[in-house]
Image (cartoon, rainbow, N blue to C red):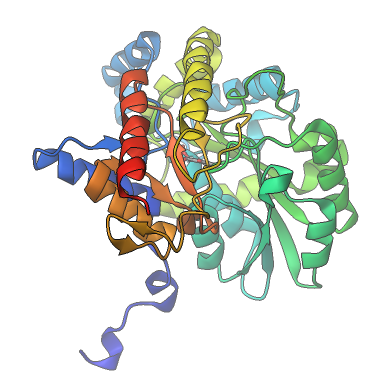
Length: 403
Ligand SMILES: Cc1ncc(COP(=O)(O)O)c(C=O)c1O
């Protein structure tokens, strides 16, 4: 190969989504006839509620929905997202601040691309969802990882953020409820972190995609609501994928101050033009309808969380904290590292995940993918019986194979 034919360094540096990779491997094994139980994908197992699907069916037949439309999204959808945001988090925004994107993932990318670049540092609390790391790197910025200790529920403190602050720090990426840990920051922690970001003149990208998935006594709190002065420097990321079981429809959004929304819209006008209208109309039905379906799914997730947590704590050598939100448990396999599993010395959770897939036919995402080696992410967005059987397989395999 000639030197001209190298890939662009920024693209070359992007690693594939580890969660999609695990899910892909499990699906391939299943296609080859193997009985694999997958805890990999962060994808609700429920079908999209029927009234949402029906809205999409109707849209298919409308001429205007078959043609190009406004880059930032259908006006009715942007209005409905603004109204939904006030209803659900108490954050008052205008429709002009909303840019509808191809999923929350695209909103993460657009938000970071709008405010971060060469020479900037992005503070990223770990364990983190790997898209944040890759998207921030792609902007040319440097990612500064701030590890949240398990003893503190994987949440970072203001003191830790302060210690990571440099003159180049420009953005704080904040996700609560968290993927991958399911941790949820308290109202006071959110006030403290928001006030700190404000005092240090930072942009904040705050991801509220799991806002409806909090359990027990835990409540969701939105950063720009807790610290209203943050509004002019905050970009909210959200979408319909998790709350309405709409992962495949690819609709998310960002909400930012007007100049950020404008920048994201300009970027999108060259990247994707806009989200498919049929999907936008489905999202409109979702966000402007009630939350009955979301509550039904929430009840199932809460039940599964309790079940998987109690099963996980029965796996020999594994500890697992009870997560307050999202649909993930994040057990620690640290005491398994260095031991032998069916005759192979376990060096890392990356390797353990592969061994468990081969030996127990169970797929989970190793903590390395989230900046947290020694842990594993198990999504409990799968049917109850499969979930129980899957963890039981690990209990059995660890019981038989761990020395
Ligand atoms: C924290 C977080 N933000 C955003 C997303 C994006 O979801 P989607 O692109 O499917 O809307 C996900 C999906 O896993 C997520 O976990």
